[in-house]
Amino acid sequence: MVKVVFDLSNKMSNIGHSIGILSSSKCFFDINSQISTKIYFFKKNDIKTKNRIIFLSNNLEIPKFGMPQKLPDLIHFHGLYNMFNVKYARKCLKAGIPYIVTLHGNLIKEARNYHKFRKAIAIKLLFLRYLREASALHALSKTEAKDILDIVPEAKVVIIPNGISSNYLNFMNSARYITAKNDSNKFTFLFLGRLDINHKGLDLLLNAINIIGQELRNKNARILLTGPFNSRRDKIKIMNFISHYCINDIVDITGPKYGKDKINIIISSDIFIHTSRYEGMPIAVLEAMSFGKPCIITPGTNLGDYMRKANAGWITKPDSMSIAETIIKAIQTPYSKIKEKGNNARALVKDKYLLSKTVNSMISLYSSIIEK
Image (tube, rainbow, N blue to C red; front, side):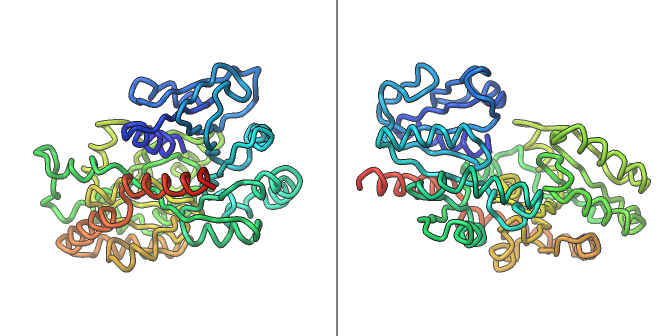
C-alpha cells in the first residue's frame, strides 16, 4: 500500500497538485527524502494505527492531528480496518469535505473469508457507515468491484487499476538491461513481496515445490522468496515448511530488496511467480511484467484474464497440485517462447497499467466529486 500511495502522490505533486500524506507508517520515513509530497507523521498517543491516509488539496496544511486549518478539497483514505479512518471520515462529513476510499482488496470475498466471522461483525458494526457515506469507493478490478457491491450495494464504485512508472519500461532500453540467459536448462523463479504465508499463498507454493522437487533439481531451478517476513509467525512457518520438505537446496530466502537491488533481482530472474489467495492488484507483478518477465499467477491477483488474452504468462488454480503442474509446464516451455511471453507482458503493462493513466483517471474522479 505504501508503494501505491508513494507513486500516486508523487506523480500528482510533480504535475502541479498540492498533495499531503498523513501517516503513522515507518515506511514513509524511509522515502521522505525521495518524495516531493509533504508528509506529516502523527504521534503515537494521537491514534493507534499503522495505516495511512493521503490528503489532496490546493492549499494543504496539517499542523497537528485533527482537521487542518486550511481544509482540503477532498480526502482519499486507503484501507478498511482502521478506526482512525472512520473517526476522521466523520470529521470530514461535519466539515463538508467529500472523501473516497481505496479498499486494496479488503472486501474481496476470499479476503473476507479469512477470519470470516470477526470481519463480518466488524464490517457491520464499525465500517459499513464509513463505506456508505463515501463519495466513491475505488476498486482495482472488476472482481473487486463486484465484491464491494455485495457488501455496499448502494455505493458508487469506480474501477481504476494500479499503474507503474514508465521508468521501468525505459530502463529496458539502457545498457544495463540483461535481455535473457543463454542457458535454457537453468531457471530462476522469483516471488517478490511480503512473506505472508496465507495471504500470498506461500504454503501452496512450497508444497508445490515439494511435489515436483526432483524435476526442479533436474533443471537446476531455484525459487527466490524476496521480501520481509510479514510476522514472526510467518517466518517460523515458512522456515519449518522448507526444513520439513527438505527443499532448502531449491528455495532461497533473500530478504527484502529495494532500489537497484530489487531491479537487479527481477532482471536476473526468468519467471515471476505470485500465488496469492487474494489481492487488490499486486504492484510487484506489474513491475516484473514491465521488465519483460512472464508470470505464473493465480486468479486472486486479478490480472489473470488480461494475462491470458495477452499470452503473457500462465494462470494456475490456487492449489498446490495445479501450481506444481503449471511450474512444470513453464520449465518445459522453449526459452524463445518464454521470451515471447515476457515481451507480451511488457506490452500489456504499456497498454493498460502505466502510472500516468492511473493518475489521469484518478484526477478525473477527484474533479467529478469536487465539482458537484
